[in-house]
Length: 262
Image (cartoon, rainbow, N blue to C red; front, top):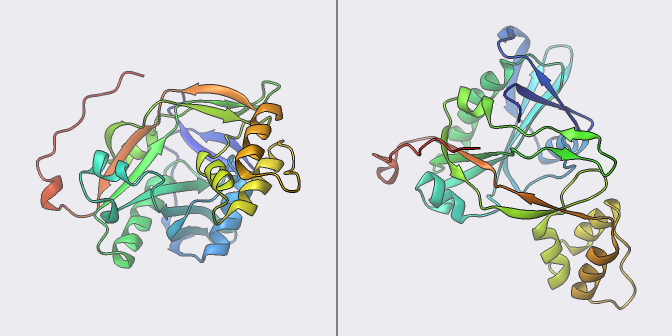
């Protein structure tokens, strides 16, 4: 697992050494529209996926344009907000994506996060907490090439995030390129829910077969998982970090969680 500062470009992770200086006058942070954020995240983040955003902040550098995006999203597991932050699910958001390009200095994360949180407070004053996850499990392609080292949330700790626990252990289904199949997307296909067409495209892009005419969603997912090039990998659970944006009564006096043994 990596203690350095993670960066992204074209789906591949890299790392910057800690302590690099940042020149604030070269940077600015502002809200960006959905398409701008989505295009940036899908191009550069290894998952090539984008969460259900509530607000999006962009990091801009003079002469280079957009060099980072923070996406504050609807939590994949709403119950995790209450579990880790101690507030109602409606009062929390998840830092669903945090992506900076590889040439940005290591100190730019905390500088960017502080200003992105400020924009979030102004835009969504009822939000009391932000939850973020650090994924300690490395990702490799089917032929053993490293796509993403595991990380333990170094930048979250540097920005005073509180280590609040872990998400539940689970089994991942990894495609040949190291990406994990999204469980919610598979459920959409099985149940023929809204977003099924997009979920099917993702499944095919990751190496799964195309759906046959007249095939039910349930049968298609079963066949795709049985015949597609997917690997089952045990995941220990992500590390959960929390930031209070304000201090509601429900968070007052909460004890710090003990350090988790990795």
